[in-house]
Image (cartoon, rainbow, N blue to C red; front, side, top):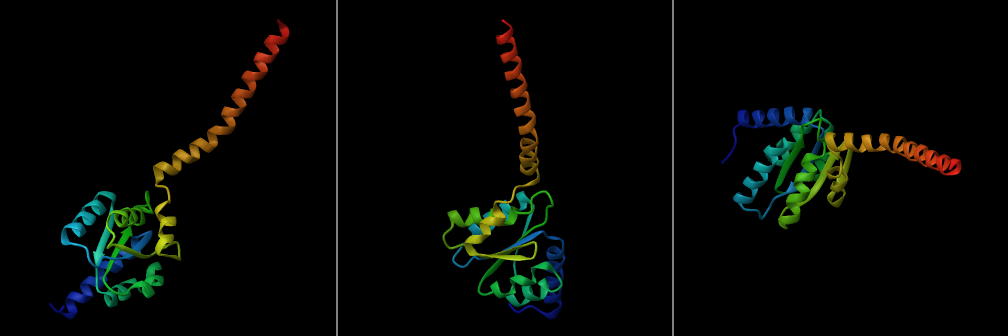
Length: 168
């Protein structure tokens, strides 16, 4: 079914709005997947706060104009599904979701991802997928800050025990 110009403009505006607010984007080839599998991907995406969209490549290119994701235009070839991480708490959610989905669905092929002005091709998408979410990052920071204090405590305890053994 052919889209009228008004419908195309609306799609471009919607995708542009999401892209302008997103922190990262992932492009994948979904050819060969069933409707059930795509529905499953979309359900998981909603749970993680990831926006997914299947758009014609020409419309996606127009949607990316004026956003940080126009660097993905060369990867918009063939059947394409877009995933956008829009949560500031988890900027790698779309890449992580698509990577996990690709592991269980061989027909799903990661093309590229963009984050912070850089394009990651195919297997490099795991760089973005491994970005920690806010909770994990804070946990890592707390453990780094706790390590010196913990070492100091062990040192003081060892000195105390040494002094007590020498005094006895």
